Image: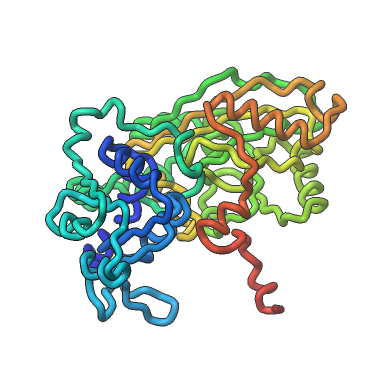
Length: 417
């Protein structure tokens, strides 16, 4: 039963891969048929709650009918409801009655052929086509009905039966390997940690010049980074070979305890956070991720302009990651497990590109506004990574993925309320 529940949870990721990325030519052709229609109705045996959000948000489906799951209060048990597995043909008859839809789209299975037979036009998806036209199977992002910027879930691979079995076989070794990598990063000196981390399979690629020594400076250097995982400041500190201080908006207690560098929480009160960062800069170098949250896709979220008002010595750092099995970020899951999941990948990759220090004329000290500086650095980092700039914010991400604004209130504040 546990394995059955896990596989059901993976189905929405299969739909994401097949329909959003259109990894196979068959899925791309299916999407072209879907995009040519007006009103769209999807009937699927997959649990409705797992696919409805994606289908309505990204494929603009008007109605989704699927298998219903049993609930206890506000929670799903993972078991099917009393109606059982949805039968497509019966659901089709109940919804359309004697009406004949213009277009029917399904797989080549006998069940789907029966399901689409009453339609005026019927199209079958033949997955065999993908084997003969792999080179033309990728759909350009500009043809997406809506840019796919945010998605959640831990799995970073298409969960075919063999791939899923491989994941379960890897889990025990992957967990031990993640603990070893964490221990190396926390306890050992930078050079030894870098060596053992690379030896254990972590692929670290550093590009750009080492920041020059600024001599007897009165303030520290502000490193402005793109945000891919919670480990961004840790990897940057390790690669530079010197301790850095990282400021964060929200961090689990576990992440704070295991962090090998100093972390300081911000309050989202602009004046108070500005004073905190000024104080930290007077003590040493500081790392900030102005996006405020992580993003998996090749997009940069809107940069907060607060950092630009605080420092004249600014070094942009373009950071990107690649994983093959697990994502090291989540919006609705347990954030304390983010570093564990990232380090559980067989060969996680961190790419760090240290750009040239921002010229003084392009900073606030040179007469630029803080928004101009923030937007300029965002474009500079996007160009270095080949990403696209957006105006989306942390709030947009959490409202879409978790149904909240992503703010974890202090327990004492919750008690007062």
